[in-house]
Length: 251
Image (cartoon, rainbow, N blue to C red):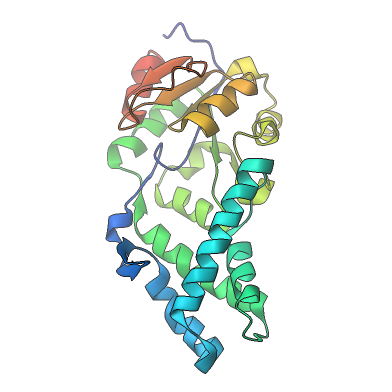
């Protein structure tokens, strides 16, 4: 058995357990660049709801500004702002006199998230790790994701969701990693002390810095991430990807 003494392992979702493949999304031109995006799928609902008042260029301008605003809010406060809220703000700022902005925002959210889910999956070798871990550890999942329903659906798509005792998604928690509150929720749900949990994730700021600030040991997934920033405290452990976790734990 491993010399690493933990009672639970908590995983990040995106780029840890599952991979999303944006290159499979539709392509369109935005700001003079060809980009992969869910927006083509949103256009029919927008045209139906807004009629002659709908202008794609105006929508893109406002939507881009709202995304930038939300990014700033998240960094400054650590709060989560949902996908629904992103679309609601955009619709309200288009100045087209729309009635039922919240209902349309929900329709756009579901369309957008269906497209995200369609290009997201757990590599079989990642999914295969989970039952092995579950034989020895309690398992949890902690994800920054702005739609809890889709986050849980994506986890369900992996085929290994039943092994996770606790699932915390930022859209439900209303805070995001690296905010210490979202890590505390996981610890409270597991009824464990920080030292008894190993957190596993791929991002430096959200996963490594966040977990360490909460006193939780962390394994950083370094594959395709470049060098770890020298100015930051290093993770407790570094592995390439999730398939290397059982070996780290001595399984």
